[in-house]
Image (cartoon, rainbow, N blue to C red; front, side, top):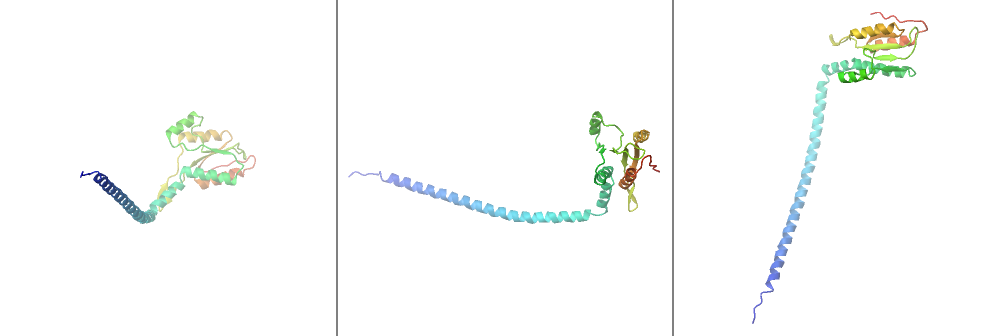
Length: 211
């Protein structure tokens, strides 16, 4: 009888293929377990992150409460009495109480580059901060240079009284000769008071400001 070994080969291949399938399944299971563990870790991290965020918020609040002392109060006072803030509030006052009045502001020229560009475009140097195109009394219009007033806190000077430059002084004098009400005003309340007086002038009346 002839011996045949042909049947053994497919059996071996079949066993190998089964092992390969099992390995693939094991890999898939491992990957699934890894993904589950990662998800759990992310959830834990999120929970811890939330608690950390709450802690950081509480720490910020504590820092704010600590910082909200005299130093922060001084900063707000300085900001509220700066020339920029005075100008903004004064413009808002005119818009609210005199909506028909036409006026213009010279804007903010804090940087030398911006000032140079503005001069090239026609900005007049030393011109007043606010020009109000409203004739009253003896005057054709109102021009006001806004400056800071002296502000004290606990006996210490926070903001000093603003000083006029030589060019600003000359500009105020020159404009007053042309029947313009030209003046320098120190502080917001002083600016509002003088402007209300200007708007109440009758024909031929003038304003005399005592230093």
